[in-house]
Image (tube, helix red, strand yellow):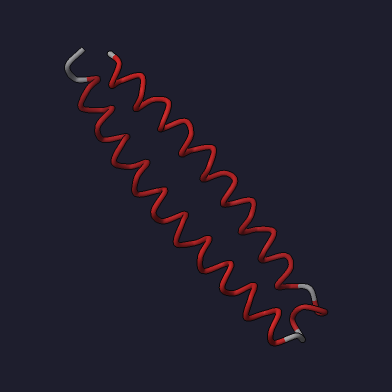
Length: 79
């Protein structure tokens, strides 16, 4: 039961974090679409790096969430 509770809490935290990452991605993309930033090569390079890092975090977090989902599904079968 304790493991189940921990996994459900981690699942909830990961979903919240994924939402934050998605919001941050939209913010970066909005900044990248700004003509003032678009015409500044250095700014665009920095924003692109932020975007790439964000996408990598989304992928890692999504993979972790999927793993927890599978663990929770397995635990539900034993209840």
